[in-house]
Length: 245
Image 1 (spheres, one colour):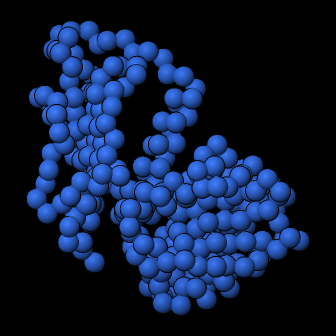
Image 2 (tube, helix red, strand yellow):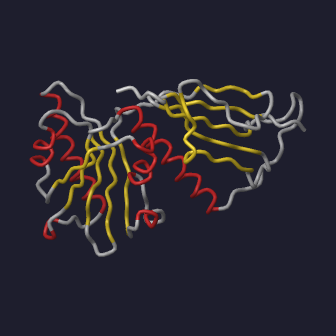
Image 3 (tube, helix red, strand yellow):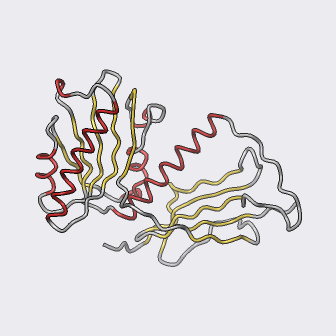
């Protein structure tokens, strides 16, 4: 049976992400679909985390820029929440206060956050947030439970590391030399991402397609064979040579 492949292309301001893999409805016209092998729990968990990181990366690349903030909200020991439900409620109170202040200044608040609990019971929140004039003061004022510290975002690596960091779990945090007992990822609803362009492929290219004005980020390049379908796949990022500000 002839295999059918497809290409998904996500276009961003300074990069293009390309995914090529077997079409889920593969097979020649009129032929039955091949039966898929059932994925293991480990494969499902790995795939779910990969998809989560991809979605976070796309939100970052669409809505956030260099010099926006990565904020760390910490708790005083006596202010630590008793559970994740309370921590989520406290974060909601914080961003609702902040959203009002942003709107007073004619700006829309956008955020991506991960609430984390360490093995020793220390809670903290990592938040990516768009920066406006005076935002650091507003952020600190709205958080009564401890301190707020800031780092500026930078786009080196096309936000790939930051995306994984912002949705890490107790199972994936080891790659950041951290240990967590709980984690909860979320993002504001005003971060839509455009759907990819989809193209059916007549054949499988031996090499990825080049594009004028871009180079292939070799750190992003992955190619292999799906162990269940025995079919090829690849994904990679094209980075604009002259980046737009």
